[in-house]
View (cartoon, rainbow, N blue to C red):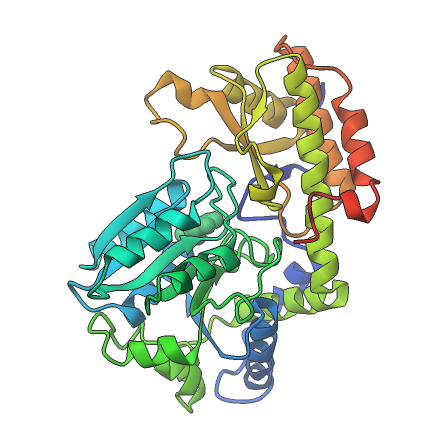
Length: 407
Ligand SMILES: *Cc1c(COP(=O)(O)O)cnc(C)c1O
């Protein structure tokens, strides 16, 4: 099967597909950073960043990737020796915990493994046991990009409130913002982080921290704060350079402006519904494949699955073999199974992920599924028949049935 021509589709969970409009917006000469249109453009970003997050509070922009967003959030909230509770539902929860630990924060883990959703009751119990309120914050990953478990953030808020605990709620939405429904203020989130290269459809290089006044007040005492990472000048500095603590990331900002325009032209509700629909098509296909072979969705309950990316278990060595086939023969790059087994463990080859994140439509997702179907046949991996039919039917399902999109 020829794949040397045609456009390669990277169905991986970031960097996601960049719209031509975003690329075109970036293709320009360096602007004057002392005044003029780049200053005006930056002023337009903040209200739109707030809107995308569902918050009326503050948004700070940093030059950095997702790891930088973790550090930015940590630096503005914690002092060395402070305690934090990290709720992990996969690789990225541990990543945020490591980031906090490396900065001198004393981290307590609530680890729910690699397939299970978090249990709000255990969170309440843990917070109740902290009678002295030493835990300053609860750190949660909205969508763990490795396991593709989606956390119920409103339930996390309720669990914290049930314990009567004052800890801040901090949420990593790097994989989910602009894909899965997220309502920062309505869900009682105090700090939220995201990065440019996933649902926001902009090249890697920008990250964002949103925070409310409760978090801002807590930040005043944070001794991990340094001049570069402090969010204060980035939201209230008064001088243009202070938004970025130095030179503005000019071309990323042009790209982001265009991406935000695209997001509001489509509408957040429509975007969330599109992701739910595409996710439903992927789940339908995997369910059918699994009826005749070793394939299985990592997350059993649809209510706890991400709408941005889907982790699949297929058993070693099929995962790697299928990814290689899809890449070489089908023009589709699938995601590796991240954090599901150690890289030197043969079981590492038993996983893959399909991203359906950002600038993605039906033919891209159906195309990826069709290539996987071809790969299963070419590689003689046992699988149920009719997956593409099931995917097509899921795509055209009545809105009420689509991937539990109504939550
Ligand atoms: C991608 C991702 C990160 C890390 O982002 P990098 O840009 O790779 O540093 C962190 N958390 C989540 C949930 C992610 O999806």
